[in-house]
Structure formats: structure tokens, C-alpha cells
Image 1 (tube, helix red, strand yellow):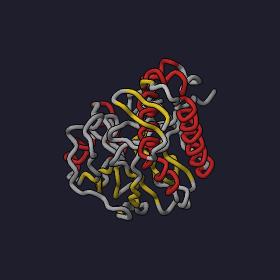
Image 2: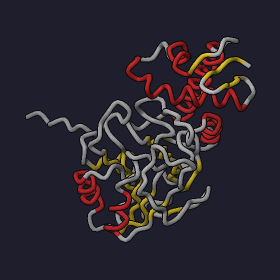
Image 3: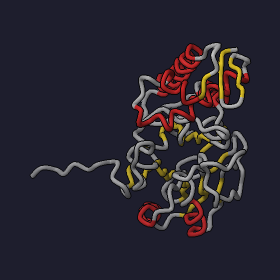
Image 4: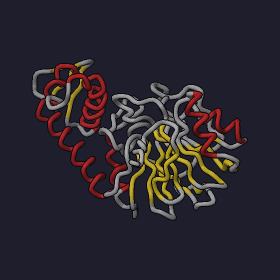
Length: 281
């Protein structure tokens, strides 16, 4: 009799992706969320929950099944976009645990109900029975983004800073392309064995992944520079030139990243802005 094939991204299934860390995928698949938002549980008896995800009843139930009778030491978030943090309120209340996360500079796209019981400084440690997670500030995709480094396995939980499905969108005014590139460079200094992204599969070659993201952003920036001329152009006029290799169905998202690139060039005095129009400096 054939052994049934189990889809590791089936919503509600707790899959151990590295020793001591399980992934539960939320039932919110989509163009930008891939198979769904990844919730991670670190530990078995003293558990840290990272990115509890959307507040969907079936996902909350799946998290509860995975926790069982364990003690929840903390409910951590990488950032507070609405597909990552809303269920943290329920999980924290259900288990009497603290919510740990940073607050954004700008509220757009963020979970309006998120309340932080503890704001993690860089290097802050949160312990489980499978070892600690260390907070690493990585602003860029969002101003309050934090990656979580698991010391025993050297796995890095990256939320939306590094994804297994698409290149992350940078969302001004809260997102910042300069900060994003700086944060990627900072992660290259870490000894990382694998990346556990907020959406998609485990990434097994962290240096190549991080260097690839930096190269991708710099190549897109070069296209933005080439598209700018002496004649002022609007963001939408530039969009088709800079993202001519991207499915037009994704242009509504690419528009945000293009704005982030242009704002970076403006800060560097390489682009000029006059209202809704941009031109070369």
C-alpha cells in the first residue's frame, strides 16, 4: 500500500523544520503570502510562539493543538503587519504570556490592535526549553521589524525581511529601502545555518540568499536611475520602465518598492522630487 504524501504546507499541520522548531502554516494563502503565514513554535515544554499570524479561528486552534499542555514563555512578533500579529492577542491571553514586539513609526498596513508588553532591544534573549531566541533589529520592510536568531541551531526567523516566495515589498512611509539594505548587510555578519521565512520554505544557503537579495535591490535601483531623466515623470510613468520584467498584476505592489527606491535616491541627492514628479538630479 502506498504511503500517503503529506503536504508540509497544509494549514494546521505542525512540522518540525529544524530541531526544536515547528512551523504551523495559517490558512491565508495568496499572491503575497505564498502558502500562508508561517507561525513558529520554539521548544516543546517551555514554548516561544513567533508570529502567531492572522486571527482566524482555525489557525488559533492549530496553534493550541501544537502547544498542548506546554507553558508559553512569550508570544513574539517579527513585525505587526496584519498577516503576522493579530492572533498574538488571543495566544497571549489564552496562555497568560507576554507579547514581545516593537511598534511601528507609521500605522499604515499594521495591526491596529497590537499591544506590546515588552519592546525587545537588540540582543535581548527569550528562553525556551530548546534554547533562546535573540532579537536582531532589521528595519526596512517595516520600521519595527525584528529577526529572531535561534542560537542552538543557528536558524534565523526572518518574518518578511527575507521570504521563501517573493522578494519583500518595501512599504513607505514605514518601510525604508536604505534601512532594508543595511539590515541585509548586518545579517550577512551572522553565522546562520538556515533561514526560516515568514512565508514559504526553509532557505538552506543564507549567504547566497542574502547576497542575492542585495544584488536584486541594487539592480532594481540601477534601473530606476536609468529611467529617471531631465523630464519629470510620475511614479506610475516610471513603474512600467523599472518593472518591465515583472507581471503587471504585481505592479500594485511593485509601486511601493519603486517609491522606496526613489526616496532612497532622493536622500542621496541622486533624484529630485517636485510634488508627484521625479527627475534625475
